Image (cartoon, rainbow over the protein chains, first blue to last red):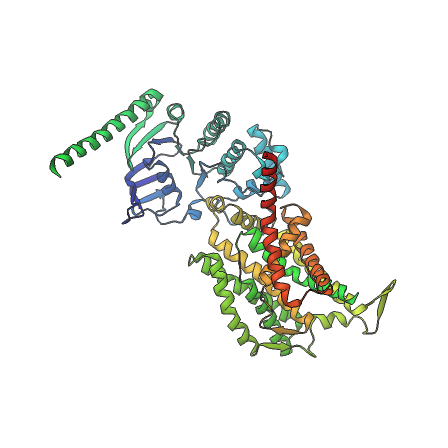
Amino acid sequence: MLELENIAKTFHAGTPNEVRALRGVSLKIEPGSFVIVIGTNGSGKSTLLNAVAGSFIVDTGRLKLKGHEITRWPEHRRAQFIGRVFQNPFSGTAPSMTIAENLALAAKRGRARGLGWALGSSVKTDLYERVRAMGLGLEDRLDNAIGSLSGGQRQSLTLLMAGLLKPDLLLLDEHTAALDPKSADQVIRLTEEMIRRDKLTTMMVTHSMHQAANLGDRLIMMVQGRVLHDFQGAEKQRLSPEDLLARFEEVRCSEQLDETASEMLSRQYV
Amino acid sequence: MTLLVGSFTMGLILSLLALGVLISFRVLSFRDLTVDGSITLGGSVAAILLASGWNPWLATLIAFFAGAIAGTTTGILATRFQINGLLAGILVMTGLYSVNLRVMGKSNLPLMKETTLVTFAQSFASSEAKWSFGRWEVSVQDICVVVMVAGLISSVALLMYAFFRTNLGLAMRATGDNDQMIRALGVEVGWMMTFGLALSNALVALAGALLVQYQGFADVQMGIGMVVWGFASVIIGESLVGSRQIGLLLVGAVMGSILFRLLVAIALRWGLNPNDLKLVTAVFVFAALVLPDAITHLRKRMAST
């Protein structure tokens, strides 16, 4: 489904703010798999998702999606295959437009948009049913501006929008990080339901060890722009939040070791 | 009374300007200064074609497309070449000044005996015919012009309303509302922005074309300050309808334009020096932009003390 071949990206190259966000990531994701991506701050996990979505073009390496070489495709062109939910609940919806209008926009993801009515009666009934199935009671408020909803409600709708036309690849970028615990649980429940029902190939970045241990069938841990661990199958199922924390501790220790070692060396030789 | 009908007609014609500015300013969230140039472009293109004996409908239509080209240019500068939107508008506006002089061949072009849309509308009544409302008398010819212009503006507004409910129109609104989201849904934001600016400036040029036919001349200076005029109409319209719903915004822009023109006519009647008009308009727009925030701020401070 998705193949990443040694992709790398450096931001602000050649300046004091240079950040080597991705330092050669290779990954092959099978259709229908649900991949969790974790990592410390600045490890490149969100950058990885943005590279796949096309928010920027990678410096080196190749990306293949569904048999297409998409390395140089702009973001809007990749959108025909990819559904996305952002970390910020305000990023995924157009606030001054109604719920129905937002959904109608998503119903045309990656397709030609012509002069047909966006909200014909059949589209409207269909959207009504889809919103009702979420069970949030939003189906009677389809004509309200989406900006009047809470972050959790907006994020649930963004999720629905991303999955409205079954995407070949669903990208979730810490999509519950900005929500209160109750809304986060709800969005996670909807996420699981949708992925299971539509058998969506998914990449989900999360900061929650709980989510990382309980969701998905594969887990990737990123450190300093590289994939450090890649757990699959039974090995992934056995992972507990404590195991994951222990792995992070290891990373922290080795990084600290690097630092103290280099400090010691510089004191001795410089 | 003639003054009233005159200002009303003028307000109606300039509501096309307001509708154009509504697209760039509110729908696309793009402060487009091309307007000052494109309204003159519409006027000068229509004037030169009329002076050469073209059919007035055709001349007006060509002026519309000339405006679309101006808007497209601004759009390309802003999106393909990544120039700041304000600067892109200023560049095109400045360039258009020379273009307009070239189009007309001189700085002022009077329309004396040419058939225009206005003379066409007037031809439906004799010049002596009068309708009286109590003490007031109105020339039927003036009424004919109002009816024609009103018909034209209503059709434009209705078409816009319909357009903003199509898939394409929805995508355009989302472009101004949340470009990150609409890009993720597969819309090329740069293209959509350019298309919207083309549409916006086409409407502005249409206003220019009607304006020269109404006032009987085109002048290379006629566009100065028009963009602020458009902002004022849109802002007044928003406070009149008190909503950001697209249909009401369209109605509001038309109403705002007419009301603003009437207010100006009254102010001039009361002795406002016409030379001060632009300053007053600018101060008005400034106040309309700043006051709402200032009032909320003040209320909060009052509440906290």
